[in-house]
Image (cartoon, rainbow, N blue to C red; front, side, top):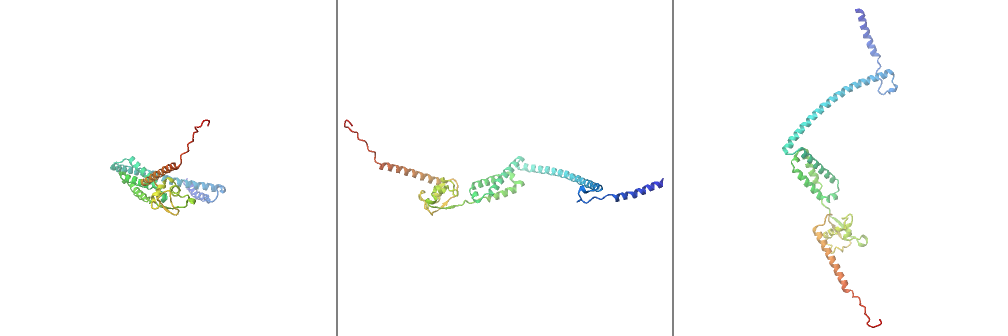
Amino acid sequence: MKNLLLIALLCGGMIAPALAQDQTPPPPATKPDEELTCDEADARILQYKGSNGTLSTKLGGIKTDIQKSESDLAAAVQGLKACNDDIYSMLGATEADVASFRQRLGQLEGRVREMQRMSDDQLADKQDEVKALETQLNDMRKERVSILPEFYDRIIALARDIKGLYREKKIKGYTVGTWAENRDCLWNISGRPEIYADPFQWPKIWQANTDKIKNPDVIQPGWVLTVPPAGPKTSDEMKAERSYWRKKRAAAVRAADATTATTPAPATEKKSSEAGH
């Protein structure tokens, strides 16, 4: 009995290596599936199963790491919130106050970015808005939440960007052409697109050139007129315009009176006193 058991063990030990040697190795990865033999297909399937097991093990480890990271992140967020709550409490502010400040600051930054894309001439016409933006930022800097680390650097950068938006309004020059060719008069010059695109602004040109223009109805070809920056008429310009129109109306009245005085009265018809007529 002992001899039989020994023989079986010896045979088993000899057969197992033989089977292992007869196992078909995996085919090359470049060989298409449809060209595989049955043994090669079985070998490739076994290879895929082995790779799948390895990847599953790695995936399990990654999931464990992710869960740990999420737990750590949640703890960090909770700690940050507690820290922020303490800071807000010291500043006498609430989370809603901070959110409102964040929104207003973002809107201000957005408008400044839009204006940074404008040309110098466009910015020169928007200096009042630039001043308003600077005033708004200065008012926001007075709020306690402005010293929070989240906002401090942004406010410093924004103040610098707003300073960079200031532009001097350019003074233009215009050379008067002839009436025959250019139809140049103060009204038409003011209405040109490259000047004001508004003929009613002609008093601005008149008042900027009083050294040349004594009568706004008369300008000479070749004169180089100073064209002030566009904008509402000043009080002096409006005063000069009112004076001009008063004089024009007075001159029209005098002309009408003179015409009336020099026109002979119509002759009256004689009525005949003779009977029969």
